[in-house]
Image (cartoon, rainbow, N blue to C red; front, side):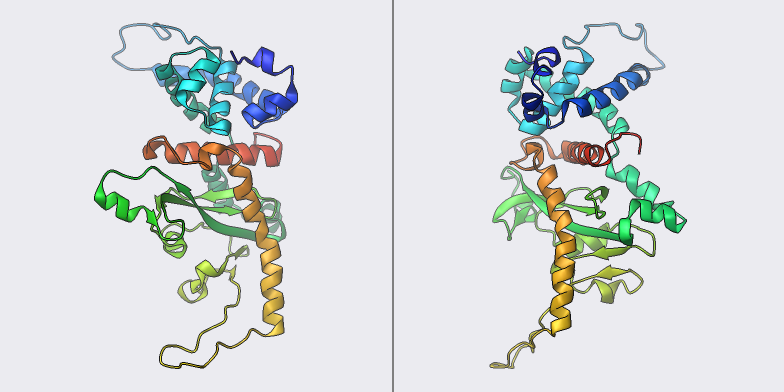
Length: 312
């Protein structure tokens, strides 16, 4: 049986199971323990309640072990059957425990939606540069496989021609340190990256430049007020002009593309970090209505690890 008291004696094994260093888990656990009582009162309060708060069966696991179970589930993405065996619970109680704890974990962690709200309120140059070093941000989208939908219409809308699978797509925006300042709700796998950008792009300070890839070609034309950097693209001469080659890029254009690519790699590194949590890397087996809160929590964990503190 997995327990904090046992697992914490081996820090390297603890990190493998939970995805956090021992001191990081202790800091998160301390904050959650501090706010748990008020959270439970709010969760259980009802005006027509006949029994007192806290009546009924108590949780079998301690709050610390329940948090550990949530992180193990997110990091390793084991089946609920295996998680039940590891934590000595019934299979149905595994996800019930996790679902009840997720809102509290979301309140504590620095989620992207919280950071986006703060970014929109930044005013002075010093405040902006503290959040966006070099006044730069980088944006990209990623896809995750889902089980083949039963409904024919859903199979069509969620099929990704790029991945050759049924997927959902999420777009994130990071700063130069990989800190996630914006994340969209999931979209259907068939949705193009630029279409998702048009639907829900981040609202950043005017002097922050957003680095994009060629999937967002045309953004400067459609959003002339947006400060962004897009790689130069070799343009084909058009239809009906066979034998005419596309113009080669100028040396300075190639140099710009190379520089932007080196800077934009941070967003790819961030995708690598979030997908260390296999709940965002493997086929998503949970219901899609839980997708956004789960991926929000993963982003919050990554932000917490990068910043080294919860109070951001």
